[in-house]
Image 1 (cartoon, rainbow, N blue to C red):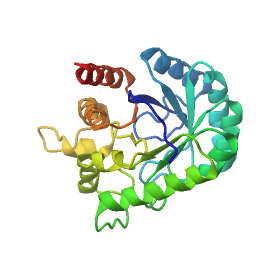
Image 2: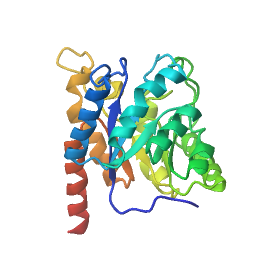
Image 3: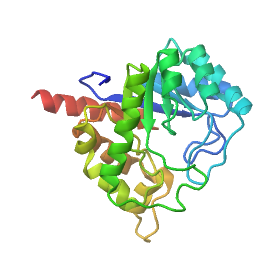
Length: 267
């Protein structure tokens, strides 16, 4: 087994260079704005800055390769060397270009780019996503979501290791082709994923499931701007369950959660 050995949970800060991401779409679409926000994430304590140029929210449509390259490569070039940079993409050409620009991790929601990671000698995050973002919520079926996600991810991780990837994480893909009950089962049984021995990455930050699980007084789901507390709760839970990395939009509370969890473990 090839694994990322670490004793402290890493904080991956999200940097979406997109006009349509569900939370911060459009905020950092210009290169200068994206670089400035990346610098802010670094100052806040992010261990990795995850740069993405294509939204994978439910219903999102694919972005042309040339456009995705235009969005992400200048930002990777500007931030690489100041912090560890990952590229959030499903396209091999984008992954290769980002690595050439300085990225050292491929955050792969398709879990298909391990050969690119092996060829370029970088880390790889393989996520569970059956289907495509545009239609992934249309036909969701699991007999046992925890075991099915585990088995799928372990198989992909083993393929990556066999290809020569030396740094591998597995991500259960919360909110990707999953109902809330599936997301909760995966969160409740994170120990099952952790016990595989493969480092686990979890990204629940501000997702719609948190809005539905924390409705307001009117019974309506909490809007995306009101999901910070729920995000911190889930992130803290994941840290206590032994995950190796949390992917968040809001870095400072995640950094604090990691520090507090570490202090508690040491006492």
